[in-house]
Amino acid sequence: MSLQAVVEALGRQLGHPVTVYDTSMELIAYSAHDRDVQDIDDARGRIVLSRRASAQAVKLINRSGVAVTHRPARVPAEPASATRGRVVAPVCAGRQLLGYVAYIDDSAEREIDPVATRCLDEYTTLIAVEMLARERAETLAAGDGERLVARLVADDPAAVATSPPRPLGPTAGYAVLVVSADDRLPRIRRRIADVTSTPTAAALVDGDLVLVLTLRSLGPPGAPVDSPEPARVGPLLDEFRERGVRVFAGVGEPVPDLAGVRGSYRGALAALEAAKRGAAGAAHGAGVPEWDRVGAARLLLRLPLDALRPADLPARVRLLLAPEINPALAETVRAYLDHNGDARATARSLGIHRSTLYYRLHAVEDIIDGDLGDSGIRFELHLGLEVSRLITPT
View 1 (tube, rainbow, N blue to C red):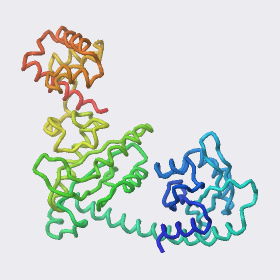
View 2 (view 1 turned 180 degrees about the vertical axis):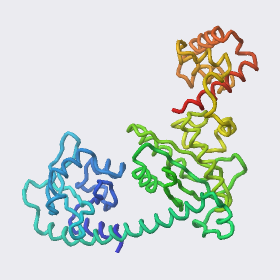
View 3 (view 1 turned 90 degrees about the horizontal axis):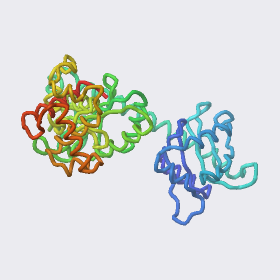
View 4 (view 1 turned 45 degrees about the vertical axis):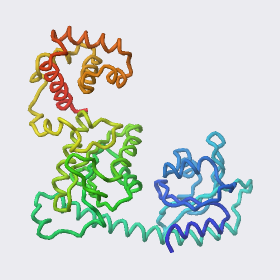
């Protein structure tokens, strides 16, 4: 019997929808409920969507003492957050706490119904068995994935070519996604596993999370990576950024077979670097940057940028970036050049009126003592401002 089947059976026995968490209060399973059932509240909806209990719920469960007593307990309602009262029971394997089972119970009785208690004892034992089996399977799969990815991205491509690993399921090709974060990388890894649907292999390589994605089709050079995963991972990483986590990602070019994964990995690392340096085409909110689609940064990042200093930038760019100059002017001329001199599109992207845009552009021309209609000056500014962004990591 699977974990989901056990949880569904427990829900039927109790007559209440059930949720199951691990010890970090990540949601790992929940039973279905009828649309008109009364035993749900807004909190359950939030939990299912976010895949974890709220911080307040965690405090209440800790206060209940369940983790210490290893016995079911009542958790009081929280009217302010529209959260109803619950019964929480531990899931244990011997003395090891694996997680919790919870269901809504508004009863004013202090004691939990004995029938419900016996039911919880029986089914939490079954849930513990399934959780341990799942943990062992994940550990084995993770180990296989770690070894496979380490082999694919190693500096010895001949080893892969002479003894190719089995394909990761039906696929037209592969692409590598690399994620870098200051912290919470294990948590990010688990969340990415939740949203990915195609077969993947994942590993930590040099402190970064590396995923080998399978593709639905292989387009011509420069075509977007044909996988739903980067589009799913982008918003997920934005969620972590909103919580103050510095996280970046990059996707390498598509390759037809596992022997080419090393090249896609190198491209993913470069796209990751473009994101860290704030290169055009790699900004947050635009999805995960793909190496084939980061524009001029693809060429510039191949240069020894670490050897460049602000003093190496063209004179007009240095004038525009001087400390006493309003940074909005450099931002404005960069946007203007990115939009190929289209005033309407530039003003819209900056959220300013066109008269404000023209005022700023005239101010830029005064500072650099040059005409923005001059193609040479435009190229100098565009290239110089992009290089300045790349040599000043975010």
